[in-house]
Image 1 (cartoon, one colour):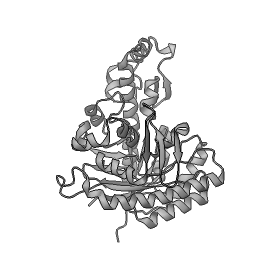
Image 2 (image 1 turned 90 degrees about the horizontal axis):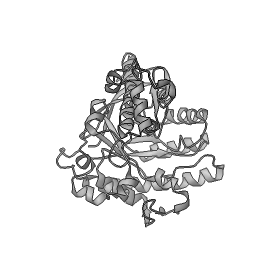
Image 3 (image 1 turned 120 degrees about the horizontal axis):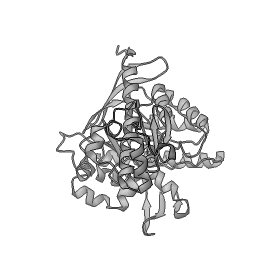
Length: 372
């Protein structure tokens, strides 16, 4: 048994409240997933991430493969145990990171040969190898190996990228199904095992997106992601691609939009029917002094906050806003104190997770899903 997805309530516009039952956690959806690239949500300890209400986080297959390596993590019982995270985990396929290594990779039908950004060493990722690495890591959810299409991309380039992704999706699924019971915690969790999501690609071409979604649904993945967004395209195109794909995906399986977005975006997508989202933005922005608040975006480095004794966000009840002032957070940034990134990140994560908590409450008040 892998995941079980249960819809609880839905709105006429497509928004849905649900539960995603994973081996390590029952996740209330829609959900925002903090990104733990190298096995940690940057600058924030696991117990704090838990206290903020995070139900599931991401690990990055490419980075963990390079350092410390998937086999050492397997020998230590998998990623959950290695990073001391008892809740839900999802690993990406490594496709997006390989995509970003434009000058260091060569793509063929077989897979991708690339050079490590750490030491220049040569590596090959095929769909089968990506599955082997993700099975070794042992996250609750793994992702099919795909090629992320850049923006802008000519139609023929997007079509060729889609051809690769569809071929790789089939190979990923076949290899995963043959080996998914090899996950380290399979026996300890009463035979439960990992799940695999397919990734819809197709650039900003609606017909290619439809084709990708329809072909993936025929393959019968455990869930479906919409990838290749937030790569530089204007927001209206992101919205258009999501709106085009969502109705084509099965209602009884989770829907995940990868790598989004700003606070207003994740709320909008959740109310459209997206169940899962992730983004590095809360912690990345925090390290540069950008806070997301109920009053809008705040650059805490601004001089006007030098003696401001107000909470960073007076409407926020997170541990940072209850204790610290804008002036103090500004001082930490000016002084280059590592604590600045930690406190800013805690607040931003609390803000993002709070949005999803509020949306879930709103959706729960809507009509129950008809089960007849």
